[in-house]
Image (cartoon, rainbow, N blue to C red; front, side):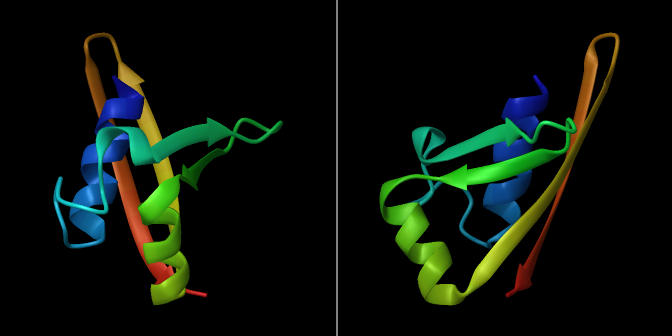
Length: 76
């Protein structure tokens, strides 16, 4: 549920919602060895983020049956 929440938060943070180039499959939330969540982009979304010179910072949390994610998009 946290990964789904991260996709929702990311789509809103970039201002597109679930419209191209943002698709469910174009964004992955992975973890660094330390456990820190990071975003990974595929296809047209990767090019979009590169063209805008943006990077996303994500945090996720869950408690029992609740999940939340926050995404902040910044210029590189």
